[in-house]
Length: 628
Image (cartoon, rainbow, N blue to C red; front, side, top):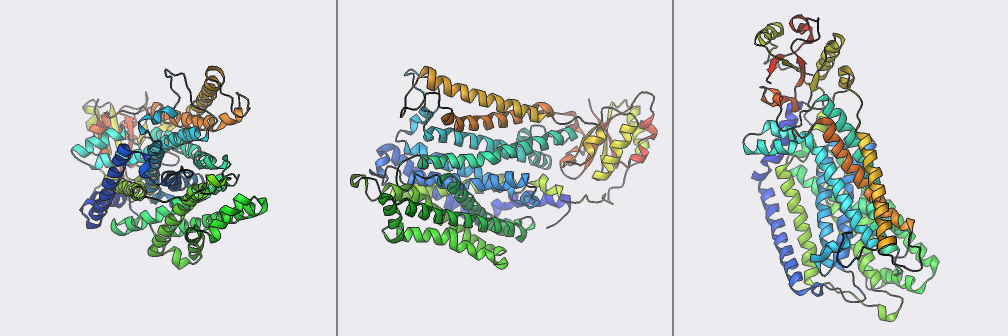
């Protein structure tokens, strides 16, 4: 991989900017758009006829739609694993792949959320699941795991969007400063006036780590809550405490598989081999291998618990998987999810893009079969003979599944066309400072200062070539008693905040306040609606069943903390501010690319004549006047 900073900016921009001219991109867009048209036709026919166009018949009331929902939610987990969990574990190799993994999470959540709404039968009334005042005086049933799903998915989607946008913010500023015309204005609006000041970076890094800490337990909770849709039921094959951890492990496995399926073609056809290397594939393959063993252990436990429990109906479900009508699907599931990933024991396989792509496709197929077996095959076996029956998928079942794949891939293709698939500023952090360009010799600083002071300049902008120079200059200015000094850099610079005397970040206080308010609001909402205003006795349980209030309380606590973190970051950094005097300074656009700047008062501290004499040893390349 090229290691100089300018090539990173140019390389990433060229990668996603030129992708539209590549034939494979257009072919992929055409195929995905065709599947989206098929999805549109399937949804239109569903609205006209109803859910009867699917193969769901009692007792199998949940068919492809719910299996697809669980599958897509699981795929979205890899983005959080790579971006948040590996960040907290300080795994630097995540930097080149976390951006498109986060985008994968967003689009997978969107596809997942589509299916429960369509499955309602009356999609136009999905908002009935939300707590809102209505003329009937009815509130959601807080003990229902289906209501928990709504809050879990909405929270996960919101936090994922915030986390994705926050990681994209400095890169939007880089695109703004490199673009021209309409694209520059659009990126300028989205960048919110980001200038890369030292205070920006200090507050930003705190907020980013806080959001990573919030997203980590959230990703575990979401699929655990989805698993409770099955675990709390008495249906054979569902009623087990094994379901939550089993679902989480399967979700991570399917998400990692989708990273291979997306990452290998992107690396091949978009020139990302400069950034995504065999090292990244090797690390992801090791994670996949570990997760496959966990999933295999879950399969073994499932059979052990069923055999040890000795219930006839549970044994019938397991027998159907081993030697019944669903045996081929079960063996395909085990082969794809457990046996094929064992090839990753060999280093040559872990570093082969073609092998990883094939294993990724196989795991995705195997995980979908697993979701189908959990949802459909379990429902085919009830406690009573009248509650048993076979499921037969229809054309519209398959059309909806294929259409959701088209929607997902089309969104990913548009993403890599419009936004950088690699985190520019995070990759820059690994790159050593390039030396000053010999073709751009330093100007005579002292004479420039005299000229600017003669024109009555109020503030000066000093340009530096590297991190060491700007840190040394900031320390010199602070030692000279110069106040109101600010720094602007393309990446965070260690020690710069201390050299400028910046106060510690206060974003964590906003996070704590938002989390507390979210917790109080969640508990108060559930208590008032479920105990005071609309009490419903369920199974003789107490109305104030605090254990049933925990899932939604946790989700809204995380949601409140995440939103408060974003607001706190905006307040502490003074964003958005799309118009700033520094943007009018010629050359300041390089502050988001490869140059380092100090903004200082022209006259310095009272009694200190540093502006005429003290700037000479600061090793600034140029000095410019800041208007206004």
